[in-house]
Image (cartoon, rainbow, N blue to C red; front, side, top):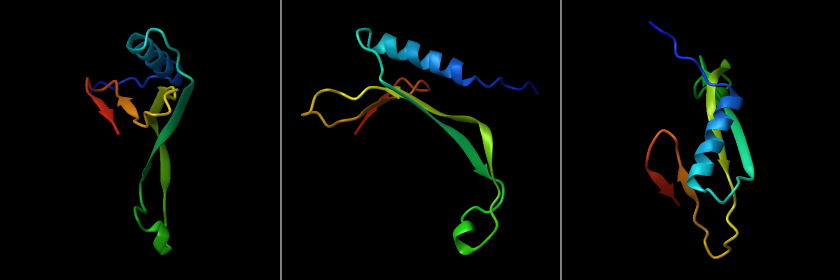
Length: 90
């Protein structure tokens, strides 16, 4: 079984910047944030019941890149993921 290589944070940020610039060619993002992934090996839903918990980091996470809109009348947030061709808005 071949293992899949995990992208570095720098590679992920570069890919997101390239995708953002393709989508918005006359714009630059103003925010980039990363949240590392984690799992609970034991202790799911028992930590608030005085049970034992064993969380650990995993080598995947979520990175976002974007910019706040200057339009004060538009309070919609638009989301696009690189793993899908669809847009979300709320």
